[in-house]
Length: 148
Length: 148
DNA sequence: CCTTGCAGCTCTAGTCGCTAGAGAGATTAG
DNA sequence: CTAATCTCTCTAGCGACTAGAGCTGCAAGG
Image 1 (tube, chains in turn cyan, green, blue, brown):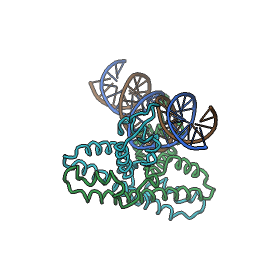
Image 2 (cartoon, chains in turn yellow, cyan, green, purple; image 1 turned 90 degrees about the vertical axis):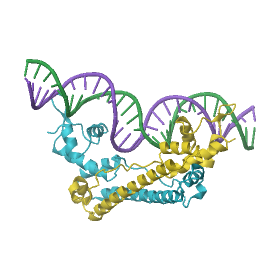
Image 3 (cartoon, helix red, strand yellow; image 1 turned 120 degrees about the vertical axis):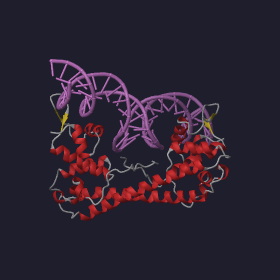
Image 4 (cartoon, protein in one colour; image 1 turned 135 degrees about the vertical axis):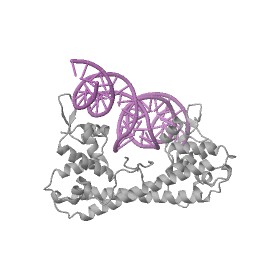
């Protein structure tokens, strides 16, 4: 049986994060030692590694909860799994597209700066006047990231 | 003088967000009508448009605070402005790179799925075993987005 | 003049996925 | 046995809002 610190080392998930996952029900409540410390077995380690990996791929915790639920039903067709993964791919792609538009605009803006005084700075000027922009980068979609 | 709702329409910033910006000191405290309602003039509208545009480009509020402070010192050289914009560009670029790595991995994973039963699903399997991945997509940097 | 209904007010709490800190108790190496 | 390190619970904070409760203001129609 592993202590929480050991599990943390083996999976790369920080100790408070493991406790947080337990708190929100993503990890089951751990067994406890006589002194009330959490103990983990192989199943818990597999589950946590799965979560870690899915988080690394940007899946939100709710999607991971669904994936974990599905992986416990090995006889079902994997349509739902596929759908979740495709949705995640679509999210990632739209974020990339949005960020590339921002990259373009920032490069244009920075390229025009003559490094003079702020009064003549193109960066400040462009920020103050959206009409000077090439694209409509108005929040067409959310580019919030999955954190971590 | 504009009401908060009118200002919201003209700038595309939602009413609660305007109040939030005032609360955190990004917008100055607005004048008030006799009935305690906020009133805005042209300067406030310009300032809010600037904020909106910078947010659209993904600048965090703290950077915007700095940019606003700098734009009030028109005689200074624009070195600091340039640095903030370049830092933002670097942030955007690293997010793009990370997201593209995730995109690759997701595509590979989804492409391998034979649409059979969950027991044989490659998606679930790959998520459970990081060894099956092409890249080290372990959180090398933060891909959190600027929201909105 | 009076109602109706939208707009605005303040304040609190929730979102996501953690992270940090306080102050206590458990375990382990020497 | 002691000292150092882990672990425990609990609360609060991050960024950038968003949602809701429960008020008041104000303009237009009858």
